[in-house]
Length: 299
Ligand SMILES: C[S@@+](CC[C@H](N)C(=O)[O-])C[C@H]1O[C@@H](n2cnc3c(N)ncnc32)[C@H](O)[C@@H]1O
Image 1 (tube, rainbow, N blue to C red):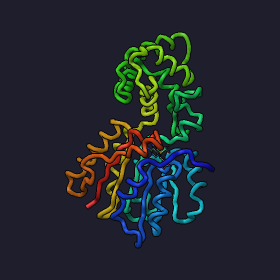
Image 2 (image 1 turned 180 degrees about the vertical axis):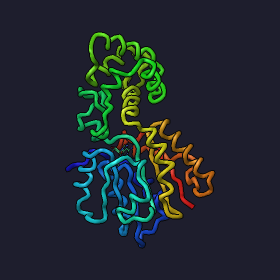
Image 3 (image 1 turned 90 degrees about the horizontal axis):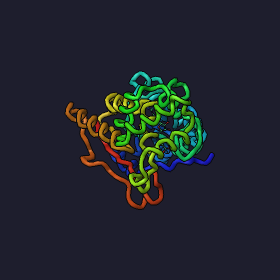
């Protein structure tokens, strides 16, 4: 299996865990395993570590298992939402508490390129966008059944889209005649609403609308908020949680949750400002361009 996803900020992620012993046994949680790129780095750099790898997408977890099969009992797998991991679940894996936690938010390159689930405006696929196929809500439901007020709200809040109202009006107009079924239909509809002079150089005009719908379908921000309040308590003293966000909504939540946790005097923020990718990394891996890494330490 050839992985299609390059782990972002690889050196910076490893550096964030530099206070964790390489000689002693350690336990890591990779809450967003994806194709296991970051987990592999951890396994290779911490020879006495075990990593619990979690992903809510069954397909990603299978790809990850296959890729990391040589690590045998050093890797454990859990399929589910990262915000729902608790002490008692760790105990089921014989883990008491954790030395390090990594959360690398969003979706994987595999989702955009090969999942056939309608994540990309560059493809013509059914509007699905579910990360777990056990979920009921799909992008099709959101686009075709949400009220105009609700659509406007998610396009503004999750897409920070200035043209939200006009795009919603167009969706409602089309919905009166037919269902909007595919990514191409949606992308063309957005293109027809936003005048060309307002298109941004490197961003497709429907980028923000696709992001907003994906966040709504998967309730991404709710899970991030919950995870950042629930997971840090699973750390040992001096344990580290490292999070990577890809847009301002995720980063704002991370920043605010970390501040709230620091106020309890049980945690310390290590990154006063987020760590960004180097120009070299952005040139080599375009997906890293908006990444921001923040680190919190348990006291
Ligand atoms: C950016 S990718 C991670 C890539 C990974 N670090 C690597 O190096 O291959 C994000 C992954 O998180 C998963 N994910 C997103 N939201 C999640 C959630 N709430 N709970 C668990 N997994 C989630 C996605 O399915 C996706 O595989």
